[in-house]
Image (cartoon, rainbow, N blue to C red):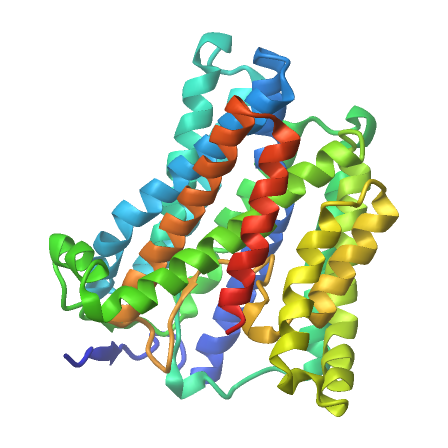
Amino acid sequence: MKIITIHEPLQVDSDPRVSRRALSVHRLLLRVALSAGSIFSWLFIFQYFYAVSPDTAQAFARTALLYALSQVVISLATPLSARLLRYGARRELTAASLLLGAAFVLLGATFQGLWGSAYTLWGVVAFAVLIGLYRALYWIPYDAEIRGEEVGVGKSVWREIAVALVPAFVGFMLLGGGVAPWWLLFGAASLAFVAIAPLRRLRDVHELFPWGYRETFAECMAPENRDLIRGAMFDGAYGAALLFIWPLIVFLIVGWSYGVLGVILSLTFLVGILLRGTMRAFIRSLKLHESKLVNTLFVISPWILRLGVATPLGIVLVDSYFYTTTPRRAGIDPVTFEQSGDAGHFLDRYTAIKEIGLAIGRIFICIFAAVLALNVSLPLALIAAFLLAAFLSVWSAR
C-alpha cells in the first residue's frame, strides 16, 4: 500500500533551504534541551526514590519501572500519532516540543515542592507520561526535496561539539549545589519552548497512514513482520541499556557526582565525534570490517569491559572505545534518539511498527533489570542486563 506524502508550500519563502535551516535550528535547540535535561532528569528521579527509601536497589528498580512506563505510553500512542500526521507534521512537532517543555516544568515544579511532598510521586509519574507522549509525537521530518541541502562538514562538527559539551556544563552547574535541579529543568524547558519558533518556517508534510489503531498492533504480530519487530525489540533493549541504565551506573561509580558524570559524558561524546571517522577508516583500511568475528568482538567487548570498570578514567576509555569502534549499524547516537523516517519516506507502515518494537524492547530490559534488582541484588541485575545487551548488540550488528 503506497503512502501518500503531500508538501505544503512555505508561507514565508518557497526556497526549500529555508525549511531545512528552520529544521536545523529547531533540532539544535531541542537537542541542547535534551542533553541538559533528559539524562539528568532520570538521575533526579533516582535520587528522589533513594531519599524515600534509602536502598540503592529499590531506587534503581523504581526508576527503571518508571522509565518503562514512559515506553508503554510511547507504544500505545505511536499508532495515534502516525494517524495524526495527516493534519501536518508541523503541528505534531509543535505539540511534541510543548509536551517536552511541560514535562521539564512539571518535574522542576515537583522537586521545588510546589505541589507538596504528598504529591511528589504523582508529579514524577506525570513526567514519565509526558515524556512518553513527546516521544510518540515527535517524528523528525524527512523531506526528499531538501535531503541533499546539508551544511558544510565543519559547521556540522562544531554543532555536534557544542551539543556534546552540554552535559559537562550542566554537571558543573549542579556541582556542590551551585544551581538547584529545578532551575536546570526550567532552563531545559525554556529551550524546548524556544525551539518551537523556527517551526513556522518549516515546510509542512502530510502523511496518510493506512492502518487503524488495532490494525497497527495486529500487524506487529503478523508473521511477515516478525523479523522486523524482533530486530526492533532487540535494538530497543540494547539502546535502553546504553542510554538509560549505563548513565545511572556511571553516576553511582563516580560517587553521585553530577560534575564528574557530566565531564565523562562530554568527553566520550567528543571522542566519538572527533575520532569515530578516523578509527572506522583505519579499520576499513585493514579490511577488519569484513570479518564477522572482528565486528562481533567490537560489539561485545565494550559491554564486557563495562562490567570491570570502577574509575572515571576507565569509564572514559571504555565508552570512547565503544563509540569509535562499534560498527555503524550497531551504534546508537546518544543525543539523537527520536523517531524518524526511513528509506526516503517521512513515515511508512514499517517505521511505525518498528517504533513500537523499540519501545517494547526498552520495557523488557527495564522490567528484567528491575525484577532482578529487587529479588537478587543490584550488582547481579546489572551484570545480567549488560550481558543481555552484549548478546542483543550482536544481533543489531548482523
